[in-house]
Length: 459
Image (cartoon, rainbow, N blue to C red; front, side, top):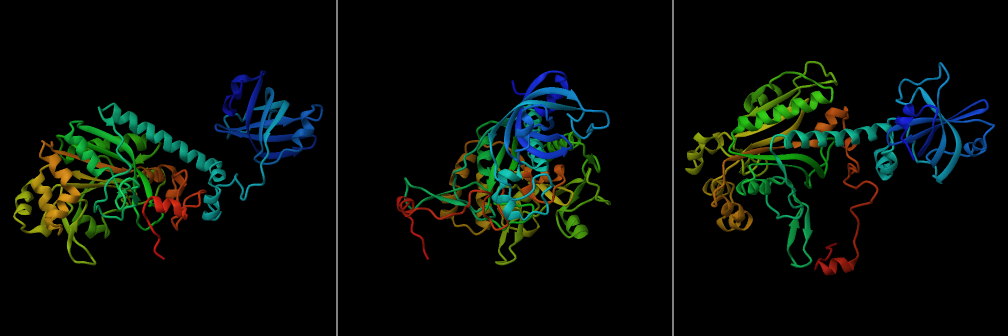
């Protein structure tokens, strides 16, 4: 039965079977050493001239897939490698089988890969992911997801998946749209967030919901933002902003400390939006005096305006999203259409080491208030009904007070893994120009597909 590289220490003196990829090769006089790589790390294989496997080992090349059988023995004194779990042992190979050959990789896999051109790394991402650094990052991603699920599950949250095909509504960024074959001329949108669905789940009485949700936005790309990302999305009923903030503060503290990070200050500082703009010039900032990689400085930003002026149109738009509630004392002003630019919302953002890693708020749960917000934003009655009538109707069936937050999982992982670019913590990211890894998308489609969707390309 096959064992993994990190298990050989418990099989000293026994015959074992290992399988994996050929890594580094070293010829020491009459001995050939091969590093065999599997999902748990490296095991040193030894080939000696008196065995028939010696000639076969001489033919092995990097990244060939092999299976070997041999005896586990201790390495000679002074030849140990304390950096490896299996570093005190090696396998003297008696049998070898080449499971698959491999052509020469287009770049080295032993290095950290930072100096390799992004486009070539993403073209051969399945090779790039063999790199120990990236393998480690994806394992951290898995561990973080498991940690979050357990933490929230222990606190009575229910994980619910929401649709990927949904309705196009104005939520701040361009939608990715999908044409409907069954209803020609109509389109689905891919979700920018599960915002409306999670509020509908509160109307449904779930009270505590979460999911690790995929969110897609057709917006300009940068180091910490792609077309698609994963967010920890959650919502709670019968809560105020302090309830949500306390839950998230507990989760983030437990998560970062579990992964060996030191929290700069506890409890997290709470900073007024206007104070943040005045002091830092932005509503995201880094509180650390020295940029220690093992330290994280988290802080809350509160008291955002409900409405702001669009820089281009000079019209009022929402600061966070149209579903975020104003403070209770500001709702009469909103309904009376008074002092709109001085209304304060129940929004709260979470920043960490210069990144905005989360944003949320207490939601509007009354139809008349939500409808008034859309009117202030310039939507006609017909447009409001067409785009948001389902939400207004749902709220009239008894929507509880509720609020929540969305945390950017990719940005949190960048901080945990010490990476500067989002692509380093995502399995198959897009390039800076928006092309997908490996798959060569976006791409043209057959005319027959366009015809079936009643579409025509305008040139």
